[in-house]
Image 1 (spheres, protein in one colour):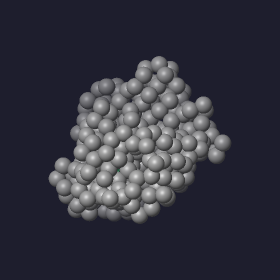
Image 2: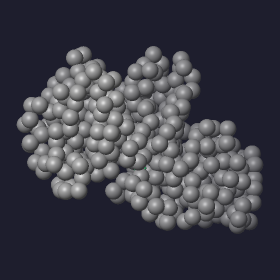
Image 3: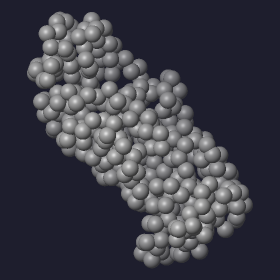
Image 4: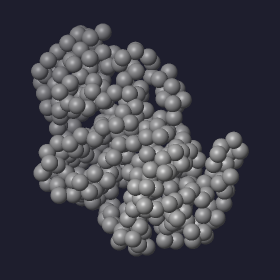
Length: 400
Ligand code: HSE
């Protein structure tokens, strides 16, 4: 009998208890092994929950119980989640997590600790909610060199952008609804400012490159400045506005950033709407593959947490396969000023267009003139933006 402890009984924690209980019979049949949830750590009491009797408030109860061999951390935030994870790994307990903040910040150390102590640290639920993407990247794409990853990695912002586009609902109203539905982070700034997507793209980039970049240092823009006019411009060109996490490995150098992008209709990411996430991976043998599914929410995310628990139980007698990451240094990173793409320039109507702004298409939308620019690098784009000054309302990278 494998004994499991859950750290955190919020949206994902309670979902995990539900999945482990509702599908217990079928999971145990597949595993050929019984399990039970022994403890749930939370500061609160849950007298009305069927799991209420499992709640403990002292982490040491779990840490010091040798019967507990699998711990699922779903607390969110860095502390005490990181500290508890570290203690569990050092005590020889396997840990699974949905916590992208901890994985993206402390992943190098925690993966190394797991290796050192002969246990596993798994984090399928940290990227893409319920979508299987981490394990396929580690296992099924392991014969490939991954060159590029582009993904819609945040369900909340994709839901907001979809509602703004389809219903013309203002940003703040849609955000409240996303919070009510349990998609948004406790502090929604992590969603709408692109921080959550930055954490996820560095995790995916690390799976591709072995180098974990600091999510706080990669260029990150969110969606708070996107106006309804910008979404109209996108529609006028047949594009969709999406918050995209992008990573590329070129000549051994890693590019990783998050920004809103205009996505042309030919790109399958343009058709991923609502809380769904989609991740396009370009790899040198398989070509392009796409991972798609619910990117947030209680049961989808819990499904991914339980997938990791099942993986650990199924392989409990095998030697753990380590994840080997190093912290990315400045010399591992490409110069972002050299990043080239097309851009959509949205100008006040009547604005003078500088000769340096080469463009392929122009449309008048609302009170603006929108130009679909030819490809240029970040440095050139910055100097064009300077020349345009106050005539420039916004500029968006196009995802080709
Ligand atoms: N707040 C996150 C999102 C939850 O909206 O995608 C899933 O990581």
